[in-house]
Length: 199
Image (cartoon, rainbow, N blue to C red; front, side, top):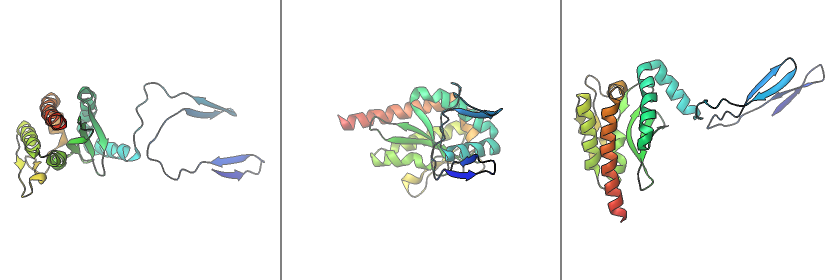
């Protein structure tokens, strides 16, 4: 912390944060009428999020407010299935942790409100069951009235948008219950494969 002596003889203290990966609220500091008080954080305060996650969510709120609100609703409903939304380098990834303690991607949302699904293939490809991720992508595409772009590399297949290369995330998030049904099927299939291999 930097200390600066004021003409009155008192000191000004300036915290210097060199690096921060997570914002954690521990208390609310107030200085009024010459008194310093620290109030506890209200219980309903949100869970701490990384700086990058906050930036991505803010970008999503500005670019696609409907998708941002739908993502909040989806997160709440998906918790029961062990599904989480976590930041990646340039997107918010929807992930499921399998019995092998590995994260499986279920799709990603860009700050612009687009849905990316190419990374869905990575882990299933590693366990020799890319057919399951392809079937998952086909079910998601069908739900969106779209199709799967079948690239030369089978690990690069992804769900196309109806009019653009990537679909709008709101088109999937607005069908939350049906998407969760597809996720439930997919994670059950993956679990069966993973547990059979470890038996």
